[in-house]
Image (cartoon, rainbow, N blue to C red):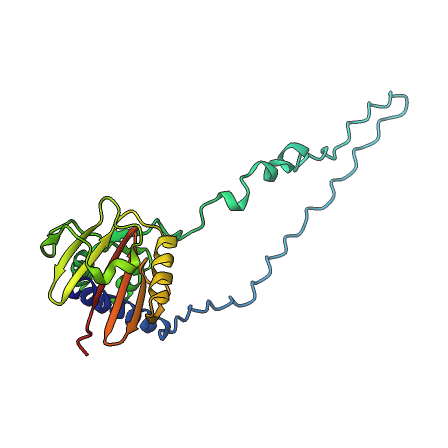
Length: 240
């Protein structure tokens, strides 16, 4: 039971510590000073009105009146441009700035290595953890020898037996059961079966894509973790 539970609990505790540390940092946006009153533009005197044209001498035909000197106003906002805003894409279709990408799956080992690469940069770690999920899946035999039977202490969780792809691994104090291709609803059903068998415990909120159930019955503790379709189950006597 030690492998998945011990490693993941330590990593989750570190993630929570970093998250609370972020909450204690006060971000103060620099306040831009309003510029002093803008000086008024210098007054430019309009040129004097041009003198009226001299009148024609008597007996001379009156010259044709010059066209109105006032230029016809040029339409500044024709009707067509006014409809342009309607053609722009609605705000919801525009990707918001700083949009969080899809979560990145990392194994516990990859996460530890990634944290080391940040060289203690808390800001970079907190930013990276927000778009990250832990993948607790592993191959048969990766963390111990597998067996081809379901241990008796787990039978209450699997009234229909294990599914294809599930496997059982030997541990220092018993066995671990790994389930693949499960859904959050499957995990909820496992928790219900555990409670029905007499285990009393609690389920944690999802942290970095992981849900955890820890239930106690007598001297034993049952720990179940769910992430990205994989359920890891361990049962044994606590070390504390």
